[in-house]
Length: 338
Picture 1 (cartoon, one colour):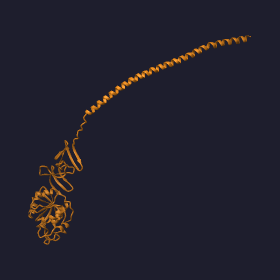
Picture 2 (tube, one colour; picture 1 turned 90 degrees about the vertical axis):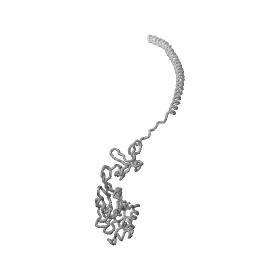
Picture 3 (cartoon, rainbow, N blue to C red; picture 1 turned 180 degrees about the vertical axis):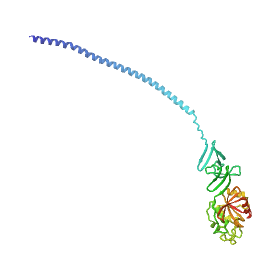
Picture 4 (cartoon, rainbow, N blue to C red; picture 1 turned 30 degrees about the vertical axis):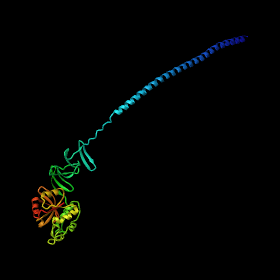
């Protein structure tokens, strides 16, 4: 009986607890629904406000963009006008100074102009022609009667110098003498009386035309007049072979060198001038090597000495100007060059 009573009491208490709990759940559910709806309404309002703000900002930005575009257009127009008004920058021409090489020719510019004539550059002297081209070799000093030798690089030699072709005696830049390096040829044994043809052969060879003494002897005309050709035969001794004057040799010299110049009667200064320009000179003398008529090839001079090649001895030698003039005068001051 007690057990039933207790069971009923527990059942009744549980029933009332369940009834008391249901209204709370219902209230909580209603609150959740209401809260959700309220939140959605608030979000909608926020979105609308944000959209309105964005629209307002977009409108403001559009206005600003329009203003910026207008300002940019104004700046572009102003820049374009400024560019039109600006003058192109002027390029200054390059001033030429110093050495300039064009092909094989060299020039020297000073203040954009070519220098001409005799010019001292630093410690050296140089010579330029009327076109401003640098010169080399033997050259006459402008407005003077003296000569100077200019090296391949254009520098004037201030002291004596040896080249492939000659030796120059030089003092303070002025040439005082020359000795040309001409090969000596002996007339013997083939031409016992052919000294003139042998002397002419040395002159022709030194000028750059290689030919033998025998060829020159064969091409020299024969005549009883020494001014027109050789008297007798140069292959034979005197009296069957005799001599030939400058006029009889002129034709064969001209054949090989393109020109020939009879210098009979010219002074010694004219002979030296030919030698200075490396043109050898054949001279006729009386009394040298025991002959009443003999020919030598002059090759140079210095101070009071003359240098020559002797066809009879086949050797190079020198003689004083006074002694030479004496021998030369006895044979009529005859001479031949080109």
